[in-house]
Length: 290
Image (tube, rainbow, N blue to C red; front, top):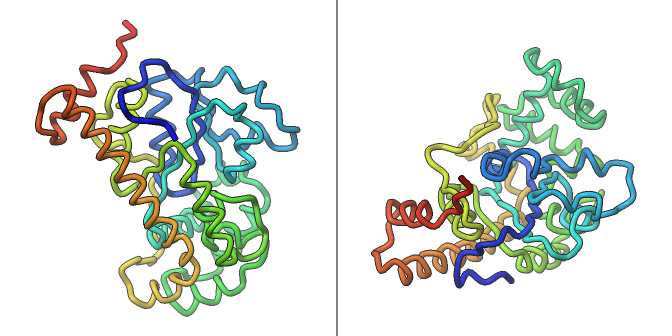
């Protein structure tokens, strides 16, 4: 595990497991803005499809991000020297947002983007469009109709990204492997605290800290899906129970990273750490390439 004893002044290449609807687009933007688009490969899954693993092909990229399960992403893009990271989201919120995003793909304003989607995603979006996801009974019927490979989108999606790919439902015993893989990663963030995620990444790599709201690619419509509605929660909770356990562990791991960062900054700068002090110190310590 990477130590946070001091900010790393040399850029270690990064491998990011991009879990859907968990702040990944903002992470991609963060690195592209600071490293330059030529140094970054977001949505790497498009480059890997149908190819034999060969990490040397992608060694020029300082940042690689992909909607792929961790073992597959590492097989294609990591020669063993990359800083591995991911960001998780509160499971019910992630599931609601993911369902709404899939449903949104059939809207007329998405027609161009829809044509570029994989065929299985198109079929899933079209089938979901025939249901009312804001109606608990209709939502339950849709979820019960899921079969492989569509299960992978909504059945403990976040747990799936941290373990070898499975087509069927995720069994409880598989959680142990996902947790081991998560524990071995260099950094795990949680999307509810993205400002702290970006502060840590700035600290770790000596990059300019984020300013303002970095959120991008938010689901534009919820189609009546209210994560606070007890009936909706009752329908969806069984589909993210393992994700919930993994998320609680991710929160603890994330908290340790942030506290270590604060301790280092407080020790080196002699300041009581609050958010303004963190940003001031990060900005002062950021690499200046001018």
